[in-house]
Length: 160
Image (tube, rainbow, N blue to C red; front, side, top):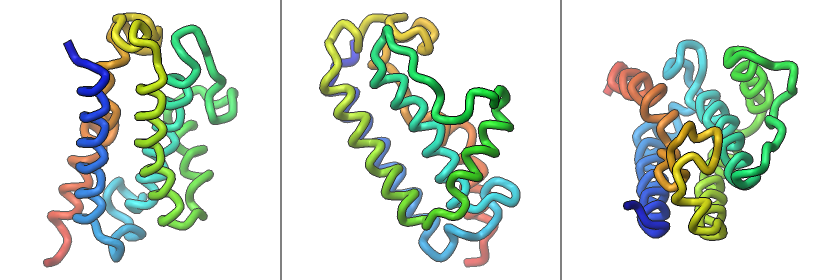
Protein backbone atom coordinates (compact mmCIF):
# COMPACT_ATOMS: atom_id res chain seq x y z
CA UNK A 1 0.00 0.00 0.00
CA UNK A 2 1.22 3.48 -0.84
CA UNK A 3 1.86 5.74 2.13
CA UNK A 4 1.43 9.48 2.48
CA UNK A 5 5.22 9.79 2.35
CA UNK A 6 5.33 7.72 -0.87
CA UNK A 7 2.72 10.00 -2.44
CA UNK A 8 4.64 13.12 -1.46
CA UNK A 9 7.88 11.61 -2.76
CA UNK A 10 6.13 10.85 -6.06
CA UNK A 11 4.98 14.48 -6.28
CA UNK A 12 8.59 15.63 -5.77
CA UNK A 13 9.71 13.20 -8.51
CA UNK A 14 7.02 14.52 -10.87
CA UNK A 15 8.17 18.07 -10.17
CA UNK A 16 11.77 17.10 -10.96
CA UNK A 17 10.61 15.48 -14.22
CA UNK A 18 8.70 18.67 -15.13
CA UNK A 19 11.79 20.78 -14.41
CA UNK A 20 13.90 18.49 -16.58
CA UNK A 21 11.40 18.87 -19.42
CA UNK A 22 11.51 22.67 -19.01
CA UNK A 23 15.28 22.53 -19.26
CA UNK A 24 15.04 20.44 -22.43
CA UNK A 25 12.63 22.90 -24.03
CA UNK A 26 14.72 25.89 -22.97
CA UNK A 27 13.66 29.49 -22.66
CA UNK A 28 14.33 30.23 -26.34
CA UNK A 29 11.69 27.73 -27.51
CA UNK A 30 8.87 28.32 -25.04
CA UNK A 31 7.02 30.76 -27.25
CA UNK A 32 7.52 28.96 -30.56
CA UNK A 33 4.54 27.18 -32.11
CA UNK A 34 4.81 23.46 -32.56
CA UNK A 35 4.43 21.25 -29.52
CA UNK A 36 0.66 21.08 -29.97
CA UNK A 37 -0.14 22.31 -33.47
CA UNK A 38 -0.20 26.11 -33.37
CA UNK A 39 0.12 26.18 -29.61
CA UNK A 40 3.44 27.19 -28.13
CA UNK A 41 4.97 25.46 -25.13
CA UNK A 42 3.75 28.47 -23.13
CA UNK A 43 0.19 27.79 -24.35
CA UNK A 44 0.54 24.15 -23.35
CA UNK A 45 1.85 25.14 -19.91
CA UNK A 46 -1.20 27.38 -19.43
CA UNK A 47 -3.42 24.48 -20.50
CA UNK A 48 -1.79 22.15 -17.96
CA UNK A 49 -2.16 24.81 -15.27
CA UNK A 50 -5.86 25.24 -15.96
CA UNK A 51 -6.61 21.53 -15.59
CA UNK A 52 -4.24 21.15 -12.65
CA UNK A 53 -6.03 23.91 -10.77
CA UNK A 54 -9.31 22.04 -11.30
CA UNK A 55 -7.79 18.89 -9.81
CA UNK A 56 -6.40 20.85 -6.86
CA UNK A 57 -9.77 22.49 -6.25
CA UNK A 58 -11.37 19.02 -6.14
CA UNK A 59 -8.76 17.70 -3.72
CA UNK A 60 -8.95 20.72 -1.43
CA UNK A 61 -12.76 20.56 -1.37
CA UNK A 62 -12.43 17.17 0.32
CA UNK A 63 -14.39 14.01 -0.41
CA UNK A 64 -17.76 15.58 0.30
CA UNK A 65 -17.09 18.90 -1.39
CA UNK A 66 -18.01 19.82 -4.91
CA UNK A 67 -16.35 23.07 -5.95
CA UNK A 68 -17.60 24.82 -9.04
CA UNK A 69 -15.28 24.48 -12.02
CA UNK A 70 -12.77 27.32 -12.41
CA UNK A 71 -14.25 28.05 -15.84
CA UNK A 72 -17.72 29.33 -16.73
CA UNK A 73 -20.41 26.72 -16.08
CA UNK A 74 -21.84 27.06 -19.58
CA UNK A 75 -18.70 25.41 -21.01
CA UNK A 76 -19.51 21.74 -21.45
CA UNK A 77 -16.94 20.23 -23.82
CA UNK A 78 -13.21 19.81 -23.39
CA UNK A 79 -12.67 21.90 -26.53
CA UNK A 80 -14.67 24.79 -25.07
CA UNK A 81 -12.87 24.51 -21.74
CA UNK A 82 -9.46 24.28 -23.43
CA UNK A 83 -10.20 27.41 -25.48
CA UNK A 84 -11.28 29.26 -22.34
CA UNK A 85 -8.08 28.19 -20.54
CA UNK A 86 -6.02 29.27 -23.56
CA UNK A 87 -7.70 32.68 -23.57
CA UNK A 88 -6.98 33.12 -19.84
CA UNK A 89 -3.24 32.53 -20.24
CA UNK A 90 -2.27 33.64 -23.75
CA UNK A 91 -1.25 37.17 -22.70
CA UNK A 92 0.43 36.17 -19.45
CA UNK A 93 4.22 36.10 -19.27
CA UNK A 94 5.65 32.59 -19.47
CA UNK A 95 7.52 33.17 -16.20
CA UNK A 96 4.22 33.72 -14.38
CA UNK A 97 2.63 30.60 -15.83
CA UNK A 98 5.67 28.47 -14.96
CA UNK A 99 5.80 29.93 -11.44
CA UNK A 100 2.11 29.05 -10.94
CA UNK A 101 2.75 25.52 -12.18
CA UNK A 102 5.69 25.16 -9.83
CA UNK A 103 3.62 26.40 -6.89
CA UNK A 104 0.93 23.86 -7.75
CA UNK A 105 3.27 21.07 -6.63
CA UNK A 106 3.60 22.76 -3.22
CA UNK A 107 -0.17 23.19 -3.07
CA UNK A 108 -0.66 19.50 -3.73
CA UNK A 109 1.86 18.48 -1.06
CA UNK A 110 0.12 20.73 1.49
CA UNK A 111 -3.26 19.20 0.61
CA UNK A 112 -1.91 15.65 0.95
CA UNK A 113 -0.19 16.48 4.25
CA UNK A 114 -3.35 18.04 5.71
CA UNK A 115 -5.76 15.31 4.62
CA UNK A 116 -7.04 12.72 7.11
CA UNK A 117 -5.53 9.31 6.42
CA UNK A 118 -8.90 7.71 5.70
CA UNK A 119 -9.73 10.28 3.03
CA UNK A 120 -6.36 9.72 1.43
CA UNK A 121 -6.29 5.91 1.30
CA UNK A 122 -9.93 4.81 1.02
CA UNK A 123 -10.80 3.74 -2.54
CA UNK A 124 -13.83 5.58 -3.87
CA UNK A 125 -13.74 8.22 -1.15
CA UNK A 126 -13.50 10.96 -3.80
CA UNK A 127 -16.22 10.30 -6.36
CA UNK A 128 -14.26 11.90 -9.21
CA UNK A 129 -11.46 9.35 -8.65
CA UNK A 130 -13.77 6.67 -10.10
CA UNK A 131 -13.17 4.11 -7.38
CA UNK A 132 -9.45 4.68 -6.88
CA UNK A 133 -7.87 6.05 -3.71
CA UNK A 134 -6.62 9.63 -3.83
CA UNK A 135 -3.21 8.47 -2.66
CA UNK A 136 -2.81 6.68 -6.02
CA UNK A 137 -3.48 9.83 -8.08
CA UNK A 138 -0.99 10.22 -10.92
CA UNK A 139 -0.75 13.98 -10.75
CA UNK A 140 1.11 14.49 -14.04
CA UNK A 141 -0.65 11.83 -16.11
CA UNK A 142 -2.29 14.49 -18.30
CA UNK A 143 1.13 15.76 -19.30
CA UNK A 144 2.73 12.35 -19.76
CA UNK A 145 -0.06 10.57 -21.59
CA UNK A 146 -1.55 13.35 -23.71
CA UNK A 147 1.18 15.92 -24.31
CA UNK A 148 4.71 14.75 -23.58
CA UNK A 149 4.97 12.51 -26.67
CA UNK A 150 4.11 15.48 -28.91
CA UNK A 151 6.54 17.72 -27.01
CA UNK A 152 9.31 15.17 -27.43
CA UNK A 153 8.57 14.81 -31.16
CA UNK A 154 8.65 18.62 -31.48
CA UNK A 155 11.97 18.80 -29.66
CA UNK A 156 13.43 16.05 -31.83
CA UNK A 157 12.39 17.92 -34.98
CA UNK A 158 14.29 21.07 -34.02
CA UNK A 159 17.60 21.71 -35.72
CA UNK A 160 20.52 20.96 -33.41
